[in-house]
Image (cartoon, rainbow, N blue to C red; front, side, top):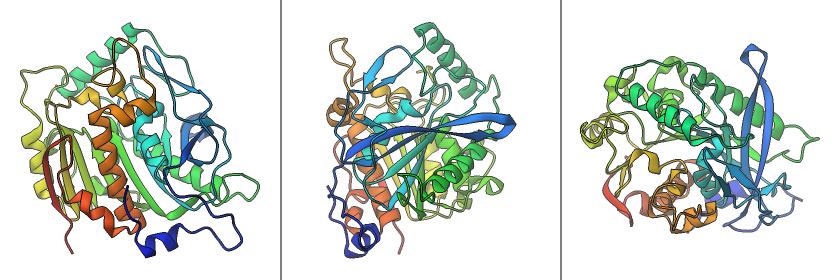
Length: 359
């Protein structure tokens, strides 16, 4: 989709003697990593990566249905190094609930690692069968009350789990006995996330300085909190490139269409942010259309749940979101200046766009 600048091509070249990887789009591999977590428990990490293997029909177990993925489970990765993007899921969800975004990045030459966070309310897990719809309704009620300020939830565990995810992936990629050896470039790490994951992305990028992970070089929060009053911190503390994506029909309180639209508050955050920065409002999108929910929103057709490949290809909300994510991380993790054309222009499916890339 984007021409790769010569410096970016050099950065993406395999070591001397290694087999040269084909050009994107790539096929996509998926596997789970299980690593020790605080408290003696296990942190489950979903890992998407470029591969030569063809999709094998594996499915993602969502909250009320299973969606066929565009992945090959446990496939051998293509030779790296590739940039790493951390994906932080929304509250009540899991890493694979954002598969349409993770696959979109992996197909374009990124490794994506998503932890299953140990939140107060969890409706699904990446490696377990989907739950009944009643559980999802409980999740939506919890999210509504949280966005309305009627309840509180733990949050500080999430940046710790992001740190543990980066540590685990880098360790696996440095293990000479692992087929992941050399897969990731530790100097090129970005982060994105939806809803609660957008808050997590901001926090890890420096919004709350004590939670900052300096290994993160670019941050892309999606459908995040409405206004800085809902966070303890300051967007001016974020000193890495920032891409803010939100929905045209998102409201400040989830599920309450009588509450104010989120747009004015998001504009305020963007105005205070440091460049480089990009603001993208996705046409007709509500909060639940992000992070894979396109499959149960505008991406669903005739009552049949489509595959992730169909959603990525045909759903306007998912497609626009992925185009800006890929362009953003190509620019700021790969040094691809050709990607600036997308970042500085309003593409299809976008009703609001602003960009200040600085010098």
